[in-house]
View 1 (cartoon, rainbow, N blue to C red):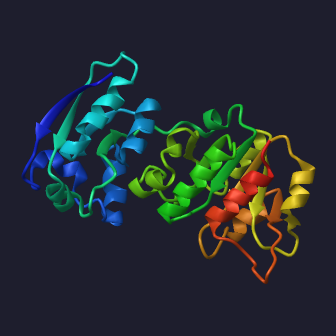
View 2: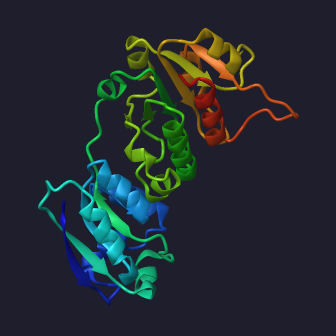
View 3: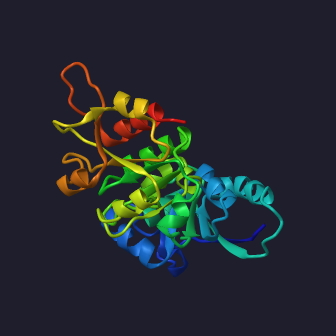
Length: 275
């Protein structure tokens, strides 16, 4: 287990805290964090799941009252790591100035971002995968990952323009399940569909189309390996993506509703096609 080096900080401008400055600035953090090879884990629950998944902390920032919880969490880890992790302890008003919001979920940690695995490695042994095309809302990405974990999806692929699953809000909404579902980016896209097809997957685009089959029809077909492709908020999947998929699938609706939020649609499709 890592050794914690507790350090009290009182100055929000302390250069040691640079990783935690302006966490509410989405545009800044979306570029800053991947470029520096890190992501932010928010809450003791998320941090615990990240550490349990083998991710390494670069540092931790928290209020004094959360130090015992962190120590107990680290003590439960396997005793095979002698790394020293700086733990910056600051009063809550100082934390709020640093981060831009009230930190009340236990802890923040700057985590080392693990390298992305090749698509082939993520697909190996998988029977059901989800593909998230250009979903830009971090909440929807996190919710889709949580549903994938809960409903037995084996892996998730995200397209080059999809929001970062390791962005703070995505991780928090997923409740840390982004650490337990294997995932990677599929690039190029939609040409990457060929790799799925070569691996034996039937690719099913969730979209409204005159030639779409129902989700019930897809369940009856029961492909041995299935990739469910879900599109961006509002516009849905690109026409080129829909044309490149083996099936176009719609969820039967009532009440004059023609579609669901992408995260809700993902949950329905994952449940219906569970194995």
